[in-house]
Figure 1 (cartoon, rainbow, N blue to C red):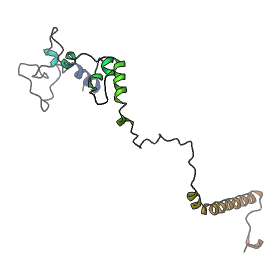
Figure 2 (cartoon, rainbow, N blue to C red):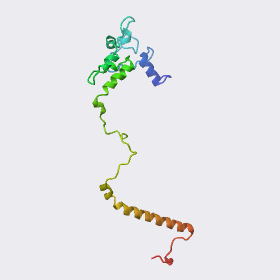
Figure 3 (tube, rainbow, N blue to C red):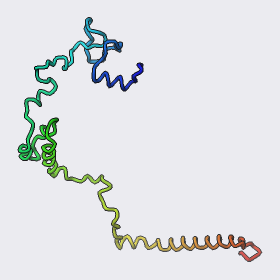
Figure 4 (cartoon, rainbow, N blue to C red):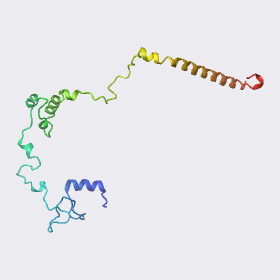
Length: 175
């Protein structure tokens, strides 16, 4: 591999084409082999840029040259069912594009919420508990009271151990 690195070489070859002094790596599938008179690495078919003469129209974009760019008046006459392809092409004024896209997105089809947006609800407002849900939580009061009582007893035992009394023994009357 050369000193320029893979990505730099790839970018250079993509923009300029293969260089004559580079070794040919074989003919890719679907590409015609180079003619015997052509330098190694050159394609048998000329590129569209090679066929372009300075006086002739650009062969890459003949459809856009035939069609005039859309105007604000045309964008104002659009309906949601119209063809918007001319308004999103290159060279169209940005204000004309914005007006056309506003018309496109006024279609109610684009106003449907999919339900997968987890951030669309306001989670700052608590929803009230229904009486049925409160009735099903009645058993939790006893559980919480027992839990708090157990925690209070554990805290008292820890305080007694800290005071130096130590845990009660069988001689002190633990049954």
